[in-house]
Picture (tube, rainbow, N blue to C red):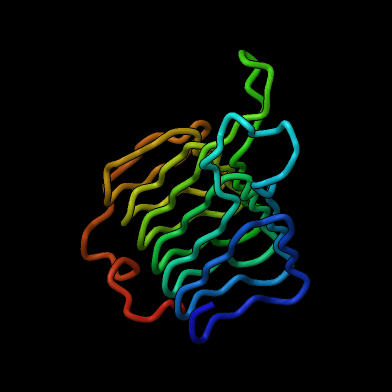
Length: 176
């Protein structure tokens, strides 16, 4: 944990290998952070020997309250990013019906991003830096174009974000 980090009341983190919080990062109250640890005798995820059950938060990032983060595989959240509102789910694992086994993939959220309330982010998804994921969206793939608003079920590119938007040049993680 870096300087000036904070984890709120009633947040639970279980079965992770690692949590990293860079300076000024915050995890609010009543979040549920789970994983499936590596180096077990379980048959689950044996086909993924390099999998890491970890949560990494960049400098001045915030996870507000009442979210669920499944860190069976790595979740990386960039600097000055906000996981806003309530009830967003990050799901790094699911059942692969073709192979009849549990499977997982990391989730990457870029720097200076905003994830709207009640969204679902699935394994393998990437939200690029300097972007917004609209409320109630389903992010189920990798996007790479910055300065965009993404949204919908499933998420798609909706519009450009002006490079003058002040959220994306903050020096302080706190938003008034």
